[in-house]
Image 1 (cartoon, rainbow, N blue to C red):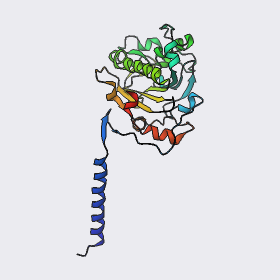
Image 2: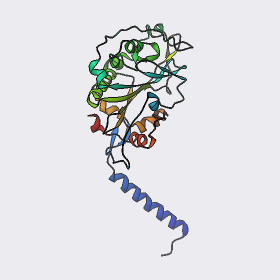
Image 3: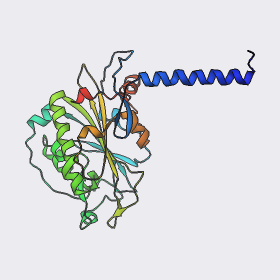
Image 4: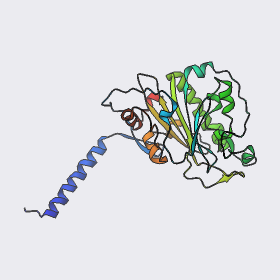
Length: 280
């Protein structure tokens, strides 16, 4: 039977679709946090090694950051429009968690290092929202100044009480447990600022609908990454239901995490993985 050029093209396209469908069905998938994630951690074609000399190697590249500030226990990228950090970054170690005995100070105050002025305590008063830490006070118990600076208003974001005191606190506690278990973790935390449509206070502090947390196991020999994306509301769901790959989070946020890391090939590979076993 003689086929026209158009018929041949159609037949080839059909066969390619069948092959593609077969390959997809051979790949196991799991749904996590609304995203399709590969359930298998494939072996990389190179040796995995992460050696970063400073926090800047992990800064996310994003248009929501107007300028960066460094404090004793964390760095942050500040967003003027919504008067809060678009992200905070720090390394949490086993030693810091186990030796930390500094008590919580609760000295919430304006951040005078923000030239145009940070949010004020009055912005939150009567709003119904908590002054939610991005860099948790519980991660800063190793140093009195680090603890005090964690209460700067630049480190606060409006969180619903059920979220801040519930599942968000559970995740923060889990991170400290992972730091103790793994020895050293790079942590990036922030709000999703792109979908904000509600403000509080005279300074118009934006209320995020979601928050994310990115974790990198820095301890050799088995490096891994995981990200969490949680809605700003109370939840009794298991934390693992909110786990996604860093690559998926980048697509959602538009951020480029670890943009200045000296080992981009390694980072790109790790960002695509979701190895839940590595994070219990």
